[in-house]
Image 1: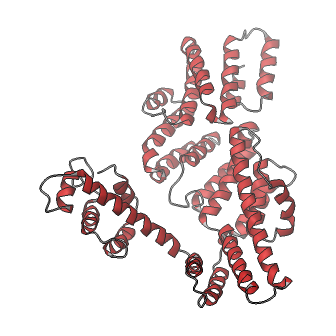
Image 2: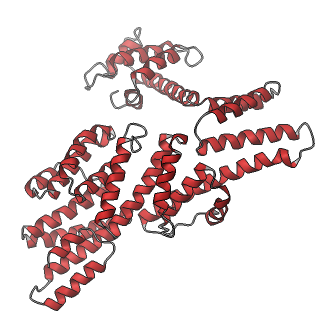
Image 3: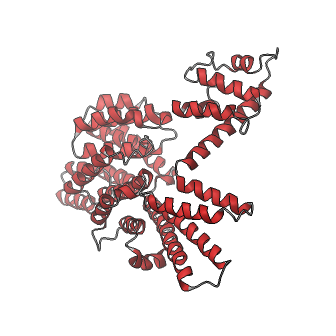
Length: 468
């Protein structure tokens, strides 16, 4: 049972949720089966224990859940586990709804609507509008609720009297703003994926929506998503990153941490893309400072979890700024915030990379052998790049020649590497040319150095230029 969906799910919940969940499982509204209640009580008492022969061994659990059964049977136990899992999901959904009073009122309105209860709708609608206005956030969720509520007001008005422009205008305005935000959100996702895949992906109605944005820049959500989109599109006509930073400071309390996380990641993706093509010391310092601020304010960990991609990007900018001591502390201090399933492998890879960047190559190679790269394409790419440099600097030309062939085939076999693909392929090509170069041919050396300098998408450009 250790690896069952039920046990893994319960282990991710805080103790406060587990205590409240016990009340739900014992409530006849959610559960009427004693075996399900006994199963939850037993798991609650022993959920922290591990080991196949421990307290959660399925035969031990079966004896506790079905005390009158003499023979072990997995079928009823599996049925009880399924019902308990559904109970947990219902509890989590209700808790999510209860976390926002405005959302609760929206569901109440829907319940009255489906049951044809008109008597209480008007008062509930007034309450929902007041609660939505009182809450401080002005994000996309706020606009969505406001749009739905204004539509409901318009609908109720239209059933009682001839409508006027004054009745219609609020609903029209709110729906327009909400739709603009949703189109801009979609546009940001399309631009981000397109940047990663190095493709131009079409987004229906996006250009038309952008032309309308100027009329609605007083709406914080529209203004921020507009500048995020322009950043992701690489529009340099305005200082969009600076405007966005100003907006994040000004409107910070009006957005959830999840929204702020999306905004910050979008800006950082722009910085990282620029660093991969036009790295400058000023941009490195600016990006490093932005990451440090985002870490300190919790904007990179909205759900108390740091993604492995943020972990990688922060590490890379740290070593690029030669903040080696800070980077080592970061790896250790923030490792517990990584997703549990990826924690040890991510730490092992980045520690190997840290030794590589501090030129402790023996330790780097030893630690790379401990990294599982089968399902981690990014780690595998970076590991191959590091090994290529190590082989070159050690003068192991035969090993390097064999390695570059394998490295090249790996990149071609993994098209999902997106914009990393060209960075690595160019690195392989130029390293091979340097290996074959006659260093006494000064003209050819200058020509090759110029080619490297002029290539935009190229990893380790500074190191390659140092080889002449």
